[in-house]
Image (cartoon, rainbow, N blue to C red; front, side):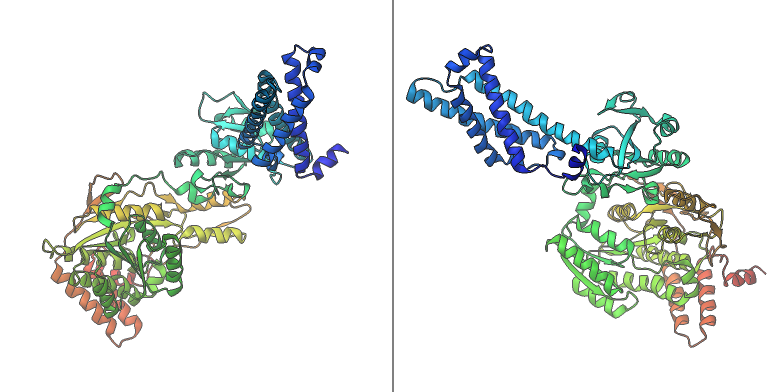
Length: 638
């Protein structure tokens, strides 16, 4: 009967809490009198103790109304509730002391001995707080007793781990029971937290079997990505699901909730340790300036804009041809920034030379970040003219206009696919690199400085492999991989944009900056781990199918061409590529020839082959792979 009542009773009524508190203050006051008179009831009765108890109880009632200590939900009692009880009792006994002083002034005697007031204060605090904790534990015990919970372990026995355990124990909606802690800190191993033992992670397999653990929750604020990968790998071998507690800055109103503890996903494991930026250099470069971003509504452009706005530019000019995406970004920025930065969005195509000139001439930005580009390799292999128009001619128009309008610095976002290109997209970006670099060599001291940044695949960008794999897994597979040996470099959007901004700030003009991409990742291993993290077994629950390399696709991406080397900078993750210099007049004429080819009234196939042939002349290392344009290379080798 009691058990059923406790399970049905969700919140203890407030009037019950008030009555219990008043009862405790009365008992504590009477106890004070007994202690004061050495438990001699005769001596106590000679003193008007009943009036003293009544005064102290009334004072407590007034204090309860003031502090509302009865308003807390008892089964969630914590430190704040303890402080509220303490403040209630302080007010209570200050009121009683005031009445005591008044009584002494009028009658010449104390209503309550001060020793009784002190004893009452101490005893009532202990009893009031302890009964709340007792009720909390009773609720927790009976709710957990009749609820089917999954045994979980927590990695990290620090503050975050303890908070996570309390959440599992106290939340009525929790379906988890923390039965073990794991720690790397050997000083904590073997100790207990609220009856839960802390183990070394080396004992994972044994403890999992002993306690029948189903999941592990990582609750560590700062954990290296390598260590996190190691933990996840061991958990997957032991058949455990892995969840992650978000960092403190992502807790809602400073508190952790159950729905914030998410399954670890592949993005978490491909991320790398946070990078350190020269914030003073960047601040001096951006603050108070007019900054323009092309491709502002794309994956890279959006993050660039979000980071740039933190450095306080005077004005941000946003250009993108996608109206809806640009509008969403504009709303996001104007809501969050409250007018502190002037934001000017323009729906425009960078290949529209007149439109772009009018925008730049009107605003006269000091810095341009050029992130607009077509980037999907197979699509650009089939749409050659669009790749050339956007990636090459669009960059040329923008760069030429930058010089005409006195832009101080032009930062171009490029790709690792521009190195020894095997596809039209990569070669188009390499030609764009060549043009802006050769244009920089024509500069005078006061002219525009052109800087290029080059990096690989970005996690979470539009069309990237990870969202594609996630969709395939959610549909039950198969997961399609082009080749068993294909590898790629990955970095987060945030990291890529941080490095673009820093490289742009440090660039003097003419450099091609390379980013340290870490280790390349085998795509099939990526697919296997994503399947395992989703709770499935590769090749058993979900198949992995090889489809063959797509048009223009490489097995291995490169950041430096064969004849190139690199120089270090003050940032360990940013290098400067030493590349071949090109004559501006020659590359300018070649690009103009590409432009003329696009205007010819020939069939699309003829135009495509003429254009790609000239691109191969400009970039001799461009050798097509798995492409219809491979015939050009075969013909030239004869």
